[in-house]
Image 1 (spheres, one colour):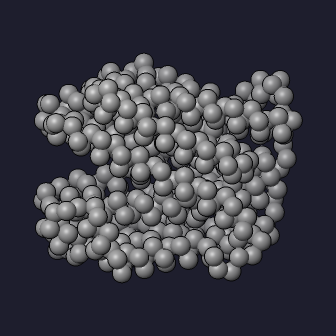
Image 2 (tube, rainbow, N blue to C red):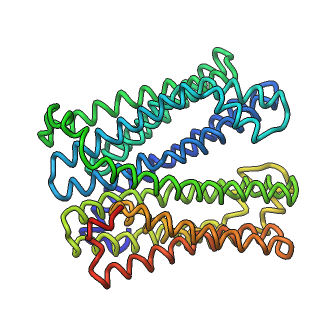
Length: 444
């Protein structure tokens, strides 16, 4: 690790565990695909793929529960305010449980709507329905886990998020192998494995939260008191972050939709290459999570010097990691693609688009880090506006598809990431020049 100053070390202490734990997320998807892919029909794999996509779209819209909780918790931690710390846990947790129960109650019409939108082979949709009917039973636990992860990250309890993510995903993988391969439960086994893992993770998370509450001398009576107060701010913040997440999901879904119009081989090769981007994003998100916690704490303490130290450390270390990813993809991209697909035509086609994989980490790292800065400051409205600007740029770049083909899709994605970073950077610099970054009235 280069240029390791005190702040850099503090950043790595939080970022490194999050990077390793984040990597278990795509690993889980890989195991799911491998297990279901060895069953006797492709319908099972198609059903799980559709079910996983529908679940990801729905739950990603509710990712605001994790993001807003981290920001509010880190600010309360920096301000040394026990009531605000308790409120940052209790209110989002109640919101998550309520939303989760609502999804469980309404899962049948929601599943039918999702499958109607997707369309396609009836046998594949039947397997997707069987998967989702069980998978969405985990909604209360899945959403509550987002809150617990955000809160534990906000108080900078570095080990806890790692334990939650790693233990949860490893448990899921073990149950997947047992229920699908051992008990031959097919797609229902894959769904049940995730449900059990989510509720198991929730229990572990609650134990960790209880430990932190004891360390911070926060009694149960304060938790009851924390139910009231500042609920409007929480709802407004969550609304803005949800709209941001919706725009993000639409742009990434558009890559698949427009790729399909360019041909079956294009959509397949893009899926392979998106695996590289996803892996890179999860790794760099470890730094974003660390920035959220440290910048939120600095915001709560109104400590501008600490905030700048965190930002400069994040730029140094995450920038180096992004350059390493870019170099790896530039030098060994074709060998990595060969590990992901054995089809010669896809390997050959992928070589035309590998240069984008070397560009995207360097372009995207800044928007990931700035997201962390704005989440820590709970500036949801500005994050929403920035995403709208980026989505507009993405849409305009899609107009190049008739001339550039699939290169136009990757150009649109590069512009999308760049505009997110540039717009957030512009807003951040303006606040810093005007001395308004720590204005809590604007942090929504």
